[in-house]
Image (tube, rainbow, N blue to C red):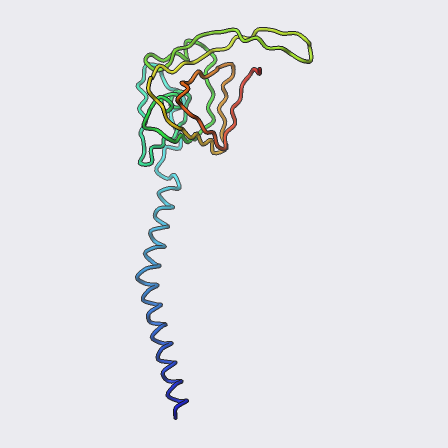
Length: 186
């Protein structure tokens, strides 16, 4: 008799534990899975512009939208320069390969950048001679932008060509998953 009552108690306990686990599954795990799937849907990029404006007119006012975590998605060289100058931005995500214009007139943006053309001396080991190469130095005009800034390339590249960025010393850059291309070398 004692053994039969133990089996009944054990079965009751198991059925009670099964009911509790089903309630837990319904009340906790299902809403959690729904929440995770909704966040994955929103983060998948369905609400971003897949075909951004490819060229930015010099006279157009570029307006960056700083998101909650103080990061910005960048599609053009001008947006990249705006993000570098914006003190609120702490992370930049490249959404497209960026190529800097190779003309001094196109690079100079009123209130944002100043461009100087300089000659850079380069010694060629194979020819055993040196030559001067023209380089365009872009200087940011914004002051007091001291911060650490992370630039995530997501496999993209920044093609500087013969452009050199002259950024303030207080701006610390950290590059991740990014290629920086130049048409000259030191």
